[in-house]
Length: 123
Image (cartoon, rainbow, N blue to C red):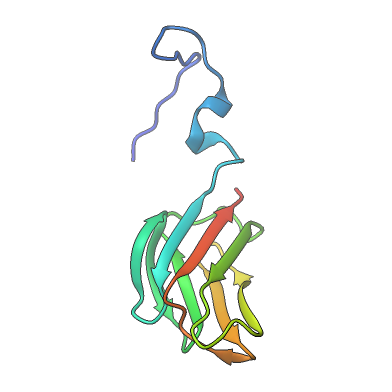
C-alpha cells in the first residue's frame, strides 16, 4: 500500500480543495456496503467486503477487506422476505473489527434472504 503526503491538494481546475472532498477520508462516507444472496453466499456488489461466512439459516458474517479501527461503528442491514412479511427482521446483532453478524428471521425462524443488504459507517 502506498502513502501520499501533501500540504495542499488541488481540484482538476487548480483550485484548492479540502479533506471532505476526498471521500476515503470523510467519516460521513460508507466504510463498507454489500448486496448478497444469503442462500448461496454470492456477493452481487460490494465495497470493502471480501467474503461472507455462513453461520446457519439466516445467520451470516460479512467479512471486511480492510478491518475497521474498532468495533464501535454503525451498521444496518435489510433483506427480503422468503416465507412471508409477518414478523420479518433483518438486523446486525454484533460487530468486530473484521466482520459483523447479520441475521434474517421471519416469525422467529431463520431464513436465508435472497437479497440481503448491509451498510457500514464509522472509523
